[in-house]
Image (cartoon, rainbow, N blue to C red; front, side, top):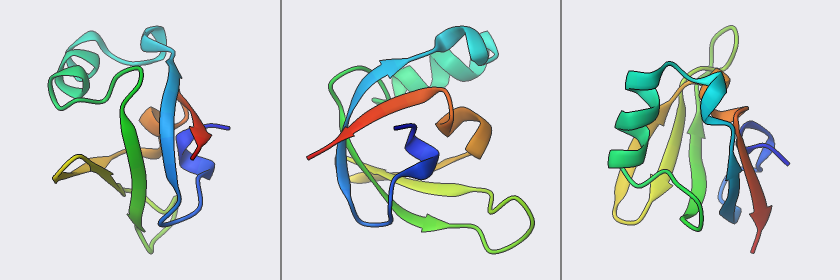
Length: 79
């Protein structure tokens, strides 16, 4: 499943990222924040308006705001 479909609070592992769907600078920034293969993540919040952007992604001890378009490029498996 893609990260944007992950239920809130469910832990998952990133198994694939389609970096070609992201702007190069955004891809580099996400990798620097630890969003990469093998990382354990969970969604802690979804926006309340319109497209429900942004998503709050818990990764390690950080919370990262992520657009749904970016989350759709990330494949995860639940833990």
